[in-house]
Image (cartoon, rainbow, N blue to C red):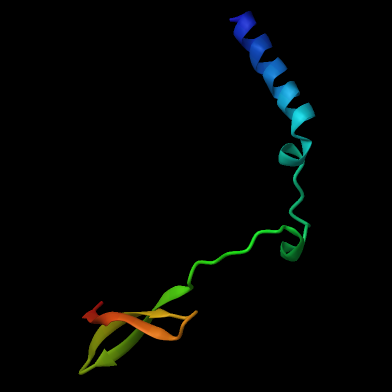
Amino acid sequence: MKKKLKLLVCTGLLCTCLFPQAVFASSDMPASDSGIETYADKIGWKYKIINGELYKRQYNYTTGEWIGDWVKA
């Protein structure tokens, strides 16, 4: 049991020394400096009421196009 604990502690210390940016990452860094760009479309639901019944349909906010048909929610 002591050997496993020593191995775990040594591995943790080694990772901390080799990859300090992963251990001590700061959330204060602005998103523009992260170098990460997202290419995924922003898709959400739009809702409307027809004859007293709620319907929903997906909308692609990136391209401004509808996805699919109106369905009962």
